[in-house]
Image (cartoon, rainbow, N blue to C red; front, top):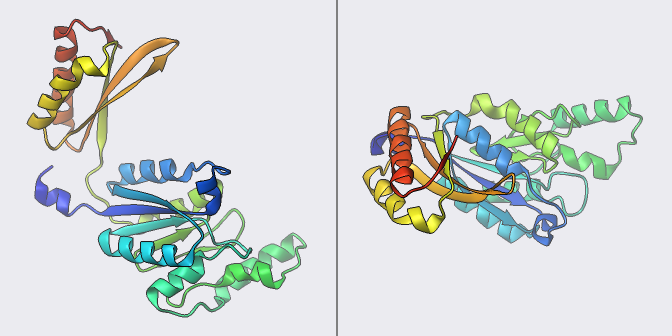
Length: 253
């Protein structure tokens, strides 16, 4: 892809909010899901941050990332408890009020009534939406996320976050979709490092990486090339196979 086309490709950042992520108590799986969906939609995910439930950190991160990227996706911090402060921070970042949204409250009340849940003040905190934001549907537990300009605010619970992201995908610009090819072999990274460096220099529009691991207790090095031009990827894959064979390695099919 040309530099001009790449500069016009939409970009994104992910802001993972929550002390539980930083303490290790909760293991995040939202980032991988978002990254794969962005890849398939032609949006370049350029940055991800894990930050604590500290208002100043959330606000400053939001303002920095929303100015730098086409989209910002946040996860976590929109529940009913005292540490659910993402909505407050988004409102502060944009300099707007945080009223109860009539439609959000209506959805919550219907959800509570159907399940015989008492709609107390804490539960209704989830209806607070920054002024000017649009709602993001939550088909799992009713409490909506929201979109404020280029910032999308999602729940932290993975199945809810995934449903929210699915609902907003049609709103996102799309760019050239990334493709990948993989060539696996039995060589170590040190054996191929020089050749990979030279190959990368000759194909700057392709991202070439090496990933060591095991398959059925057998060492396996996966050489992965990613880019938007399938023909160039196929050419790089051919060169990778030639490199492995010239170094005396075995290619795993």
